[in-house]
Image 1 (cartoon, rainbow, N blue to C red):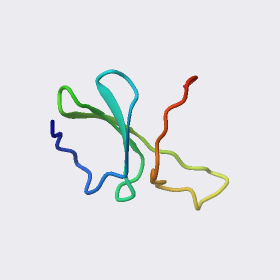
Image 2 (spheres, one colour):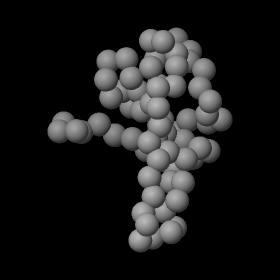
Image 3 (cartoon, helix red, strand yellow):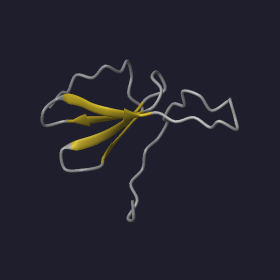
Image 4 (cartoon, rainbow, N blue to C red):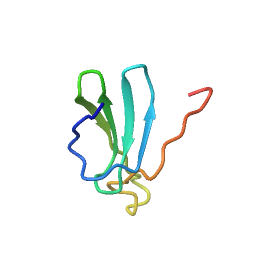
Length: 69
């Protein structure tokens, strides 16, 4: 199936729940979550480090699964 997103390009997709996938892209800051059964954006996570101003609007290059998280 095809799902329309607000992202220009997608670098990585990883299923995090049965219907939810995490999506990473270099074109838009943050980690984005999509409900693929309903074809909708359900949220984003953005982070920064107040001690290091270089970490602002971080972009996601890769996503991987882990057995404990």
